[in-house]
Amino acid sequence: MAPVATRTAEISTAAPGVESKKVAGINAAADPPSAYTKDTAILHRTPFQPPTAVSAEGLYFTLADGTRIIDAVGGAAVTCIGNGNPVVKQAIKDQVEKLSPVPNMGRSNEPAEELAKLLLEYAPGAFEQVAFVAGGSEAMEAVIKLARQYFWETKQPQRTKFISRQLSYHGNTLGALSLSGHPGRRKVFEGILNHDSFHHVSPAYAARFKTPGETDEEYVARLAKELEDKFQELGPDTVIGFVAETVVGATTGCVAAPKGYFPAMKAVCEKHGALFILDEVMSGMGRMGTTMHAWQTYGDNVAPDIQAIAKGLGGGYVSIGAVLMSPRVAKGIREGSGYFFHGHTYQAHPTTAAGSLAVQKVIRENDLLKKAAEAGEYLSSQLRATLRSPSSIVAPYIFDIRGGGAFWGIEFDLGEKQTPKPFGALVQAKTMQKGLIVIAMAGSLDGGKGDYVILAPPYNVTKEEMDEIVKRLNESLEELVREYL
Ligand code: PLP
Image (cartoon, rainbow, N blue to C red):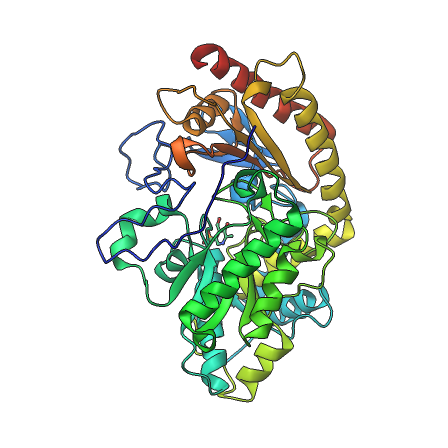
C-alpha cells in the first residue's frame, strides 16, 4: 500500500471553542468508535455498555452469566502477569493487615521506599529519584509540573513551553490532554485546553507518513529539522522540553519510531538545554519484552531526563503511576526548593506500593521480560501467517502488523471501500461477540483511515492462548469481510 504523502503543520492553535486546525493526513473530526449505547448508573468511559465481569484468572474474565471471555489486551495494556496471581493477592492482604492508611504528609512507608529503590535499579545511572502517583494521566500531569519546576529552580523561569506530537496520547486530565495531539480525544475540550504552553510536531509514523522514496535516515532528519524549526519558532530558551511516547499505543496502535529518531530528537533538546521526556505509561515496564523500559529496546543511549510509567507498574492489581527523574532533574529540585511542589492524597500508598512490589517480584522471579519477548515472536508470526496468508480473505485489508514483546498493533486499510460504521467499531463489537476483548480504534487518519486493533496480553501468555486469540480475531475479521467488504 502506498504511503500517504505528508507535510508538517501545527495543530491545536485554535482559538478557545474552535476545533483543531486540519493537519495533512490526520482526521481532525475523528470520533471514537460507537457500537452500542445503553443508559446505566455508571457513566462509562466507553461509548457502549460493557459486560459486567465478576472474576478473573490469567487472561480470562468470567461474566455474571458465567460466560468466559479472553481479555487479549489486558485492560488497556495493564495486566502484565495475568489476573489472580496468589503472590500479589497475599502481599496486598498482608500490607492491609500491617499498615494501610494513606501516607499523605509527614511519613513514608517501607513498601513505597523499597519500590522506589527497585525502580532505580532497572536502569542504573539513568534515574536518581522517583515520585509516585495513582495512574498514567496523573503521572503525566506530574511530569509537566516537574519539568516546569526544574527550570523555575534553575533560574530559567522563561521556559514555559512543551513540544509534543500530533496523534499522541498522554492522558485525559487537562494538562495531559493539552500535551496530547490526537484531535478526536481533544475536540470536545479544545476550548479549555492550554494552547500557549503546548505545541505539536509531526508523529514518527513511518508506515503512513514517510514520503515515497524517502529513506529512514531522511525521514528522521526531516522530523529532527521540524523539531529544530519549532524550537526556533517558539524561541529556544522558552522551551521546557520535547515529550513523546516511546512506542505509541492508544492512538495509532503500537507504532515504534524508526532507528535513530530518539537520538536525533534528544540531540535537539540537548542543543537548546531543554529536557527530553518519555511517556512510557503504556509501552514501559517490560511491555516491549527483554528490557524494563521501552527506550532500552532501541539500543541507543536515549535515557530521558524525565519518564512517566504506570499501567504495568501495578499490573492491574493496584492503581499506581510514577515519575522517574534523571540525576540532572533530581539535582535541580534538591538544590532548589528541595521538594516537589506536587502532591495527591493517595500517592505512595502502602497497599498500592506493596501490590506493585509483588507484581515486580513475579516478573523478576519468573523471567517474564524474556517470556514477553518470546511471546511477541510467536504472536507476530501467527498473526502474519494467518492474517496475511495468500488465501486469506482478510489479507487485502491488513495494512500493517507491528509492535514488539506483548504489544502488537494491526492496522487495517479498506482502500476505497466503506463500512456503515467505522471498521474499528465493527471489529470491537464482533470480537466481543466471540468472547475476545481487544482495543479497536477508528479513523484517526484522513478519509477515516487508521483503524487498528491492539493486542497486549500478559507477558506469561501461553502459545495455546495466543493461538486462540489469533483464531477468534481472524474469525471476527473474516465475518466482517464477508458481511461488509
Ligand atoms: N500516557 C499514555 C502513553 C497512555 O497510553 C495512557 C493511557 O492509555 C496515559 C498516559 C493515561 O494513563 P491513565 O489511563 O492511567 O490515566
